[in-house]
Image 1 (cartoon, rainbow, N blue to C red):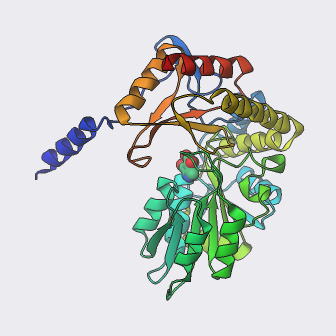
Image 2 (image 1 turned 45 degrees about the vertical axis):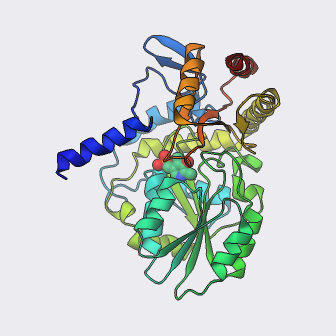
Image 3 (image 1 turned 45 degrees about the horizontal axis):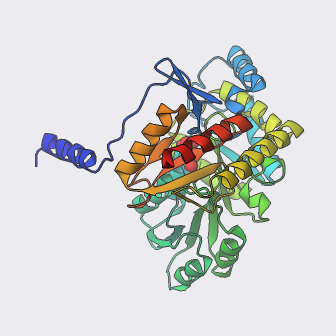
Amino acid sequence: MSWQQRIDSALAQRREADAFRRRVPLAQGVGRWLEYEGQRYRNFSSNDYLGMSQHPNVIRAWQQGAEQYGTGSGGSGHVTGFSHAHRDLEKELAQWLGYPRALLFISGFAANQAVIAALMSEKDRIVADRLSHASLLEAAALSPAALRRYQHNDSQHLARLLSSAVEGQQMVVTEGVFSMDGDSAPLTNVAEATTQAGAWLMVDDAHGIGVKGEQGRGSCWQQGVRPELLVVTFGKAFGLSGAAVLCSDSLADYLLQFARHLIYSTSMPPAQAVALRASLEVIRSGEGDERREVLAQHIAHFRAGAQGLDYQLTPSESAIQPLIVGENARTLELAKTLREKGCWVTAIRPPTVPTGTARLRLTLTAAHTREDIDTLLEVLHGVRE
Ligand SMILES: *Cc1c(COP(=O)(O)O)cnc(C)c1O
C-alpha cells in the first residue's frame, strides 16, 4: 500500500464507521453560552467546570503578567524559561496539596508522557485501570515496561495482577475522576493494593482537581490518599491550561534530569503562571466553595431529572454526566437534535470509548443556571417522544 492509499483507506474506514472527527471553529466555546455561526447555544460541552475561564481576576492577572514578563517564556525551564511566576506557582501548588514539590508542565498530556517515559524501564510493569486516559495508556504502551490493564475500578483485579511475579518495579496508574464516565476511582482500595505490592501509585486527577474535596484539593485529598505521583491539569476546573506533577523532593529532582518534555520544550508563558495563581486563589477561597456548591446542586438536579430517560446514566457524582446511547449514528443524531433545540452537547464515539458505548458527554458547570439545567432536561425528555 502506498502512503496515499494508507491515508485514504484509514479515512474511509473512519467515515464508514460514523467515526470521522472534525473540528468546528467557535466564536465562543467556554462559559455558559457557546457561539457558533452567529447562533448562541447553552454550552454542555466544556470542561470549564467552575466557570473560571471567564473570571475577571484571572483575565486581569494574565494581562498584568504579560505586561510584566512579556508574552513567551523564551525557552525551557532549564535555560531562561523558569521565572519567579513559575517558582511561586509551584510553591503554592505544593503547599496547597501537601507535597514537598510541584513541577509545571505545558499540558497534562505532556506530563503523563514525560513521567512514564522517565521512570519506567524494561523489567518493570505498569498496571493501569483499563479506562485510563489516552495520554496514560499511550505512554504506557510506548514505554519499555509491560502494560497490564485491570477491570475498571476493580481493586481486587488490580491486586491479582500486582501479585504475579515481576523482575523490576510496578507502577499503578489511575484517574481520580474518569474523563468519559465521570465516576470516581476507589482510591483508598487502589492505594492499599498498591502499598501491599510494594508498588508506586500515579493518579491523574484532571477532572477532580479544583472540584472535589476541601478547598478543591481533588480526589486524593477527598479520599485521604497520597500517591507518590499526583498529576493535576489546568485545562479543566482552573479554566486555563498546563499541568503539574506533585511528588517528593528526590522525585522532582529526578524528573528535572530525565523528563524530556521538561528539558526540551519551552515552558509555559510566565503570564499564564500568574493567571494560574489567580485561579488557584479563587479556587481555594470561599468563592471557590460557592462555585463548587452551585455545581453540586446542578449535578443533583440533573440526575434527579434524568431518571426515566431512554439513555443510561453512569454512576457519576461529578460534573461529567454522560448519557450512554450505544450506536454511533444514533448518538450523532441525538447530538444534532439537541443542537437544533439550542443545547450544545458532544457525541463521544469509539475509539475514545469502548465500542457500543457511544455517548453524549454532558458537562455541567458553575456558570450554568438552574434554568439551563431545566432546559436541557426538557429537551432530552422531549426528544424521547
Ligand atoms: C484532559 C486530560 C488530560 C490531558 O490534559 P491536557 O492538559 O489537556 O493535555 C490528561 N488526563 C486526563 C484524565 C484528562 O482528562
